[in-house]
Image (cartoon, rainbow, N blue to C red; front, side, top):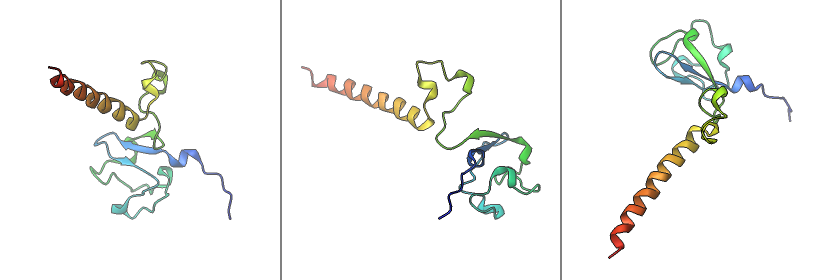
Length: 111
């Protein structure tokens, strides 16, 4: 059993600045025969975005899966919600809307 340390940078995802496609090293790129586990830095120089064909230089590092979205400088603002991951933010927003809807519907029960 090998006990290798995984480079955190290798797990970072990169987003295309032209179309929004996100390259995830864990998934690779089936369209260009890039194997799963290939870091963005090790992609061939001829690799292009599988959606819009943009070059790799227009991609920006957006961090690993599950990291909080937004600028790190702004994480201290917003009553702590800036540090939530996109999934947590969706649960908070749609959960609040669902709860508000249930309260609204419950008013019909009052006679």
